[in-house]
Structure formats: C-alpha cells, structure tokens
Length: 136
Image 1 (cartoon, one colour):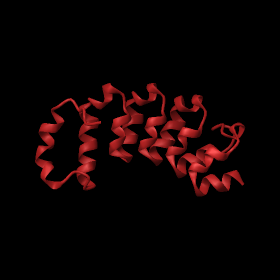
Image 2 (image 1 turned 135 degrees about the vertical axis):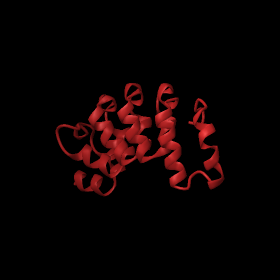
Image 3 (image 1 turned 180 degrees about the vertical axis):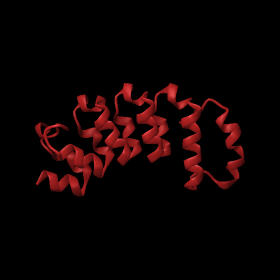
Image 4 (image 1 turned 60 degrees about the horizontal axis):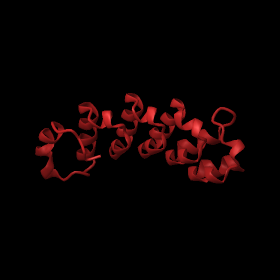
C-alpha cells in the first residue's frame, strides 16, 4: 500500500513509517524520489548525505537540493544535475558553486530558454555572468 501511495504522490513518503524509509532495503524511497524529489525532506538525515539518493531527488526536482547535506550542495555534479533540471536550484548550492561561471551560465541560459528571463535581458547576460552571482 505504501508503494502505491508514493508512486502516485512522492510526498506521501511523509506518512510512511520511518523504518520503511531506508533507501537500500526497499524501493519505497526511490519510488517517492522519482515521483517528487522534494520528498527528500522526509528521508533520514543519513540519506541527505547519500550521493545516489540526492542525485535521484535532484533529477526529479532540482529544488530538492535544499534538503541535501552541505557537502552535496558543494558537489559539482549534484549541483549541475539540480540546475539542469531546475535553474533556480542554484540558490541552494554552496557559496563556492553559486559563483561558478559554468553553472551560472547554465542557469541563466536555461532561464532564458524557458522564458523565465524576459527577452530584453538576453543582451545583459554577458555582463551578468561576469559578476559574482548574488542573485541566488
């Protein structure tokens, strides 16, 4: 029954007994994260530092990065995956990565492509990229 619930709505993980929220023992946590990465907030603290768990979550919803450990919010690959999925996830990255020109460029380009930034701001992109990004 729990598996059906989290497959339909990942956030239902919050109602699953804690002893069933172990990523390795069953597929319930994985199913929840694949359905909605934000369900990462309902896994154990130990799982917030598990690279595979966090990568699964941020590939589903980049904003799940906010629930990752500080170490993983400073991991280039994890932050790249989160930003590729949800450009505004950069706000949850470490300070070091919020200033990474490659990631900032990726985020701005995706926001432009998705119409998040207005067309008039396309010309400003070059100058914005040159700044330390405090936008996030």
